[in-house]
Image (cartoon, rainbow, N blue to C red; front, side, top):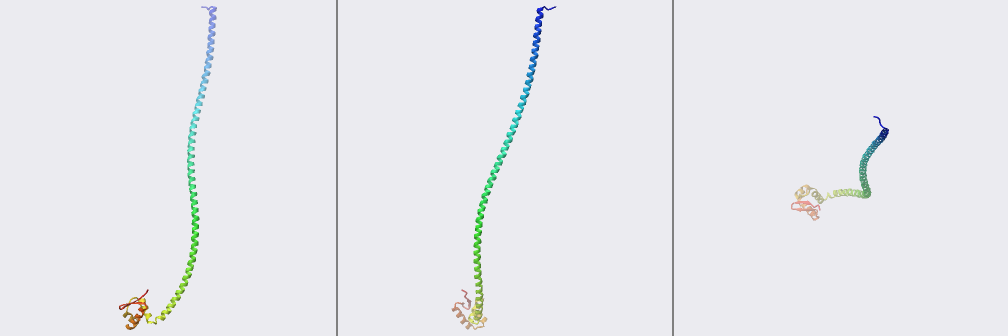
Length: 210
């Protein structure tokens, strides 16, 4: 069956329209593919950007954490420094106090040294006086020895010396010790009692030391 001219024209027109539509469809497909490629690229870029932001946020959080830790360490060190400064101030105050105490102590020691020197001078003077007294005592003892030697010849003194050295004695014991008659001894004892040198108590006699 052959086509008429009008049908051929219509068919050609339709074919051209189909071709045009096909070409348009191909262009649309190409554009769609390009847009899909662009969309994929954009999605990849967005994913990369999102990942970069997440990484940056994570690094930022880590930095904030590290910064917080550093701030805490700095605060601890500042506290330690403040405590150390307080200790240093306390030590300075203690050193000043000790310095003042040392000055007072040195002054006190100096004063005591001066007092000791004065005391040593007093002791030296006393030693001199003691030496003089010892010399005088030696002289007195020598004189007493000489006087004793002289007085021992006196019966009254001999009786007093015996009583002074031996304590209480009976009249009979003294009579035998001295080789004197009781009557003569009683006369001597009476004289010594009147002088306040002895005490008579019946037949016993003793020297008075006060």
